[in-house]
Length: 107
Image (cartoon, rainbow, N blue to C red):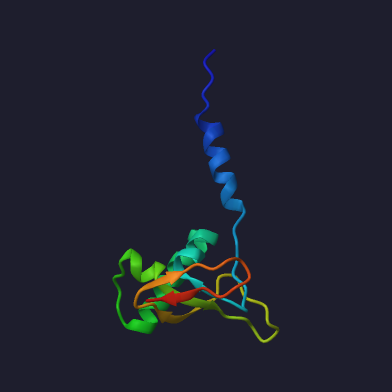
């Protein structure tokens, strides 16, 4: 009997996707950080916000990674699942800060 490890590897890889992160309404986030928190949740929302803010529909990777976003809290201060808002595009690059601090633009 031959044992295939492919299904086990697939399950192990996909298990990490259950650990989806969310952003905190107190901080600004680089687009890349949001994708690292949960690419499935944030990619479409990032591109929608960039389209809304810039009236463009095509974005290169640096447009996403070098843009600051903030999480939009509701009236109770709770961030609904994946709600983000465009803050500004960095002329240089977006600098990732440690957890619990705003990300910033450099350059």
